[in-house]
Amino acid sequence: MMPLRTYIDTARARIGRVATTAGAATLTAGLFTDAVTLPGLTAALGAALLGVGFSPRLMAAHDKVKPIAMMVYASPHAGMAGILVAERVASGGVARLVEAGAVTAWTAGVWWIRPALLAKRIAKPWPATEQHQEAAPAVVQELADPAARWWAENVAREGGIAPGTRLVATQRIDADRKAAVIAATTPGEPVPEISITRLSALTDIPEDKISIDPIPGRGAGLRMLTIGKKREASADTWTEIARTALPGVELVETNTYELKELR
Image (tube, rainbow, N blue to C red):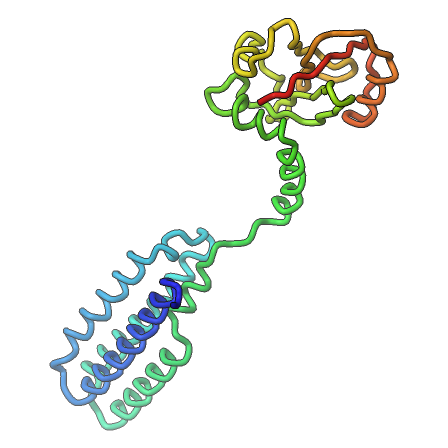
């Protein structure tokens, strides 16, 4: 069984063919009688307005291509209206030959080019810009860390404990210890005050095992998050964190924490 989308596209294509045939018949009749002029103009105008106004793809098109797509879609309707008016105004022998040629050209052009389909292709969503494509891997890498993803969904969400922040540079020291860096999402803005009480309630970790401190050598846009029970550790451990998580930072105080996983 074919997908529903295939049936819809097939139906639209057939309706377009029927409409082209009806338009060609109306234009041909207009060569011999004026009785079809007004109905033909009304039908052309109505079809154009309905087609443009009720096409989700045309209405959602990028602002730079929307006018072009709409003009392409309405071009056969406008051409048909122009030929009908010409048939009504000019009725001489030579004029009729020119009008007959115009009818033939209109029919062949619309049948072959299929302006409605072409307009929808023009109106397709634009691909991501090069800047967005370059930035995407960093975001994916950042949220690939379960802790960073948890932070984004539970802590940094709108109305959460720390909106406008993200968890980056997560570094596991060993099987039971972990440290991470909290960063402000807006450049030039500091990391907001984060309630350790609320974070403790959210994570079910005692308050005395959670600390958020400035990072030596860095500005207020970054903070170090540590979770777990304090115990003695060598300075080499924290030097390694600085080297891998935040290159160029020299940590002058060393504390190690036992990690209880965020959940």
